[in-house]
Image 1 (cartoon, rainbow, N blue to C red):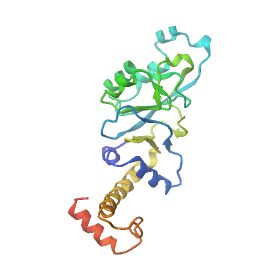
Image 2 (cartoon, one colour; image 1 turned 60 degrees about the vertical axis):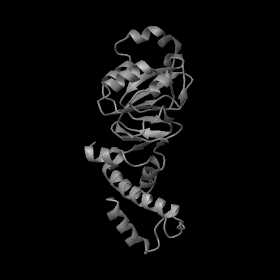
Image 3 (tube, rainbow, N blue to C red; image 1 turned 90 degrees about the horizontal axis):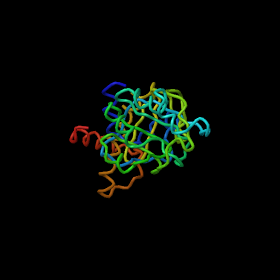
Amino acid sequence: MNDATREKLMGVSVATLCSVMFKRGLRNQVIQGVHPVGWKGRNMVGPAFTLRYIPAREDRNPMTVFRNADHPQRVAIETCPPGAVLVMDSRKQAIAASAGDILITRLMVRGGAGVVTDGGFRDAATIAELEMPAYHTRPSSPTNLTNNEAIALNEPIGCGDAPVFPGDIIVGDADCVIVIPADMADEVADEAVEMTAYEDFVIEKVKAGTPIIGLYPQTKPEFAPEFTAWRKANSR
């Protein structure tokens, strides 16, 4: 993704992005059930690098598998590109952890832009203190081997009911995470910036006592020149 688009997406909300993509017919791009593991005060933005889990089969998942240098979970941490977001399909359950603080710290040190799982993290309190954004459903202490097997890297996955293709743009805010198809990220970012400017104008008007009818959405023409003046005064 280009730097200009990344910068724009750092300053808009997932809710606004939802509205922008709804206009384009996309209704199921929010990763359901996930929330920040310690909000960092800034958005998480980056292209998706994916890891998929399947139900564990006991004979394939003893603790000794972690000695295998080709174990997909470990390889994901060591090959996720700098600036990317590691997105994990953990089958929407947190009975066992998707990863813990050591692996997530390694991902951060390698330059990862963030990590998302529709399962849970162990050592969540420690992950919450890291600089890198992380999102999960809830803390989970058992090792992923308990009931999940990491099976495939960087292929299309489902995460929290959202389709995620490698390279899709992932944006997380203080509420949740959304997936933007890569080929529309630039135009979605542009429109979201414009929508955010108008919504900030609307908030000021509403706080000052203005009714929302005709203001949001703007159907009364008298608000158009007022918004133009507001943008100029606020360098928006």
